[in-house]
Image (cartoon, rainbow, N blue to C red; front, side, top):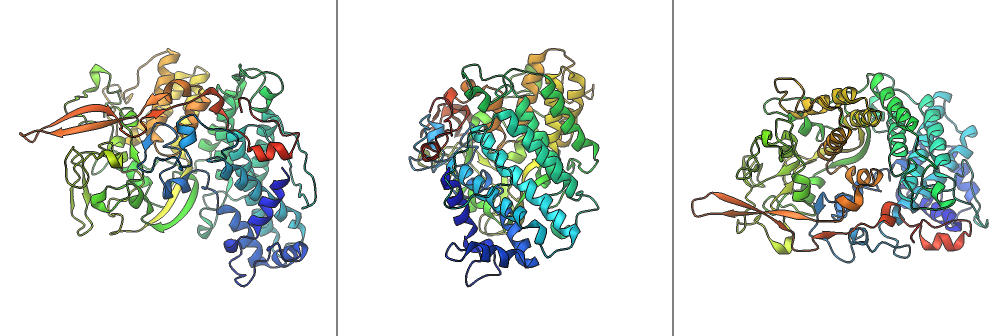
Length: 581
């Protein structure tokens, strides 16, 4: 763990951290460190730049992977496959079950970024008293820093379980750090306390926060993250569910015994967000049902984003996901496994005889979120040369975009996050912002907690809100496809599928199947694609087949938690490795 200091100190000296110091970074290790801090925190502009830099890696544990190489959490679950799936890709060890403590991808970034940014936060806190800023500004920045520190610590706890709670400590370069891991329960309580304190220092997102500060932490960030953390803590994997782990190590990755009161606590946290009245679903069912679900992801500022990560003005998502005919790189394609979880516009699974699903016309009458998440055979999109939309054909032998084994096409392309006015190299640039937490997720957290507490109709109320926005038909009973039932298994299947559909490609499923402890079933699977054949009569036939390249996902129970980097365990004799590694 001595490297924690070195990692953080080097990162503080990175070039882009303080843009106002072009000739030499103030925190360059070749300059006396106290002088660097003195110069930084004696200047208001440099101080604010220092805090802003801590935001720069907010999405680096997830979304930044999606931007670049197709190695996102979607490929790490069963949502997506990538043409870049090869031995050097970061997520391959996790996909094929070879993850170990000596091969440090893909989790080393989470570990390194976490400690780097915690040290940045603690450096700010150390210098807080002497900041040359108005008291109101100082306190707001302190709230932001405490939130950011909690976020980075939570990212590590989510991956590894309990880690040392160092609080405001700043270690020197020469210190030998022998810190034991803290219990999972203590980490959760620490995070909740930090987020509550940060919330009290921050403005509300409506009325109090300045428009130019959009994307910086506010009370909603803290409350949304608290709700997510408590939902995880209440879930099966952590809530006394580590039966196979013996001794003290069990307490490093969860609680001693199950307690349903943890679900009540998660419910209360989600309700606190809802009760603020700050957030709403982006709902618009004209000119087509579910249009609001599309508009949500291409409008930087809206009432649904609670915790967004700023991503600039670009066509990155179009470049990553759109087909070759639109100059896309097709770095990720939706799996048929994911596509089949989308039901019909009646709100029923495609396996339900009453759903209206016809396998001979698999794209007809589907949940509108299916249309706004996936591009299917014959769907229209603008071209590079013209804003006029024309069909994208994905059948075998179709020009450019037809199923091609060498490119791992699945007969489908991702549409979610893409602007229909753009291709990869033409059309509209989008002021990109990616949701880390949004209101629909909070509603589904609320519903899940109610299901665990057997309040099924209270859960139905929130699920109906999400389905109504999605453009699902209400039906004669206005239940949007939901049954009146007291069957716990039914409601579990509903909420788990609803999360998979609503939050597809948003880094949710990767973690959900772990916290539910369903990963050994759901991730030990064959990734499927849809083979579409065009007949002489111009009619299409459909066949479900495995992808030809790396079709299998392998999950082992030890992969519920990531291994700590072996170098850290060797340096710190008190750092206990996770079970199985």
